[in-house]
Image 1 (cartoon, one colour):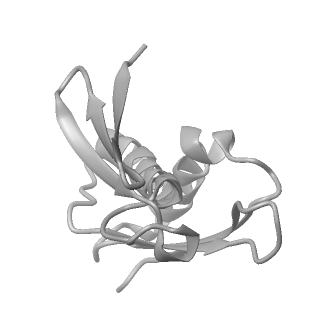
Image 2: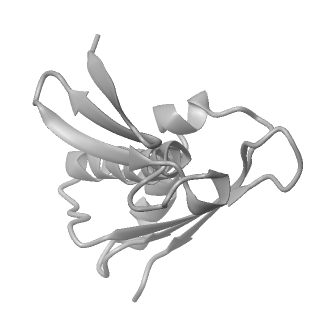
Length: 136
């Protein structure tokens, strides 16, 4: 169990505190939903959680084999629905791995990304498009 405290500061801004570490994140509503878009929106955090979770699961699998993913990058595009109800309609995820990952380990790393708890928690109506790039 992890506790998270959320303080609504007004003007569609929230201060989120991860109680075990006291790390804070600020949120604002997006410009297209009455906010100023000054920082992450709540749905932006969902997209960020997906990308960071997927690469973390890959890193756990890679660590077992002595493979380092340090420097790998993830890009997530979040697309909101155009018709009500307002929701995340599509997430496009591209994972760009660092060079040097052995060919025979790549499929296992891709499978690990699919075990991400955030991915498993998202509604099946969200169109999730995932791609991997292994340079060499």
